[in-house]
Length: 422
Image 1 (cartoon, rainbow, N blue to C red):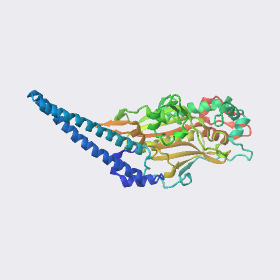
Image 2: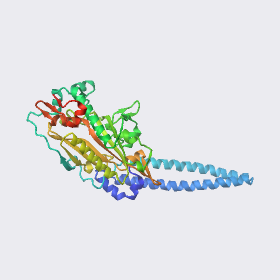
Image 3: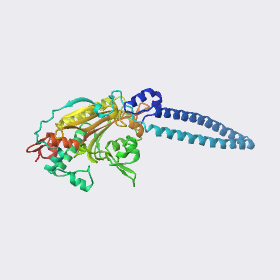
C-alpha cells in the first residue's frame, strides 16, 4: 500500500507511474491529499484543544488548593464542554483516517522505472531464450492424451469427485508429482531458503496484507462460516509470518520456501487454453519468498531470477524469460519477470513462474519493518514460483515423449526411482 506521505511528496511521479498500469490516479490521489489536509487541520485543532484542557486542569487544581470552589466549578463546567469538543474532533479525525485508508487500498503499487510500457501480454518484453526446443514426431501428443495413454492422470475421475480443474494423479504420475515437489524444495533449501509448511487457510487480514484484497477477492475460495480463505499461493501465509514484526537489518534478507496446494477460482477461464493441466482450480506449487533491505532488493530479485533459471536448466526444459509490461503487472507488483517453458505437444509457451519485487507495498500493509541503527523502515518483499507444477508436468510429459515412453529428467532419478514412464 502506498503511504500518504510518499504520495504527497511525489504526486506527479506517482500519477505518471500508475499510468503504466493503466490506472488513472489523478482523482483518487487528489481526494487523498484533500482528506489528509483536513486530517492535519483537525489534528492541529485537537492539539490546541488538548493544550487548553491541560491548562484548565492545572488551573482547577490551583483553585481547589486556594479553596476557590466557585471558580473551580466554573472551570470544571468549561472543561466538560471542552471534553465533548475534543471527542467530536477525535471522531472527525477517525472518519478522515478511515476515508484515506479506503482510498489508499484502491491504488495499485507503482511500477518500477524499468517496467516496459504496454497494455497487454503481447507487449511484454522477451529478455532471453534458453535451451533447445525438441523436434518431435508428427504423432506427438498433448499431455492430456499422454496422461490417459500411460494411466498417470485421470481428469475424468477428478471431474466426478470434485469438478473440472481438479485432476486425479495416479501411479507414476503421482510419484512424478511428489518427486518434483521434493526436488524443488531440496534445491531451494540448498540455496539458503528455510522450509516452512504453512496453513492452507488464511484470514482476511493475511489476504489483505499481500494485496489479494481488494484486487483478487473474487478469485479466492471463501469459507463463509469461518470467514477464512483457501490460499492462492504460499506467498500469502509466508509473508504474513512476519506481520507486525521488526527485524534487525543484519538478518536481512530472510529467505523462505514452502510447498502447498494452491486454490484459485479462475473465474471466466474457458476454451482450449485451459485443457488438461494448463489451468486448474487446485494445483501444487513450491514458492520462494524474500524479505529484503530496500537498497538490495533488486539485486535479490536478480538472484531469484537466476535461481529459477537454474531449476529449469536442471530439468532440461527450454524456456524464456519475459519482463512484464505495465498493463500486465499485478496489483501489488513493482516489477515482474515471467518464466515460460515451451510445451512441444501443444507447440506453445506456458507460464510456470512469476518472480516479483513488491518493494514496500506488502510490507506497508502487513507492517513489516526493519531496524537499522536507531531507524525503522519498511522491508521490501519478493516472491517467485519455484516452481508451479502443472505446466512443468505438462512440459516434461510432452517434450520427453518417445515411441517407447516418456523419459524422466536425470535430475529427478533419485526422487522417482524410475527413468521412464512406459
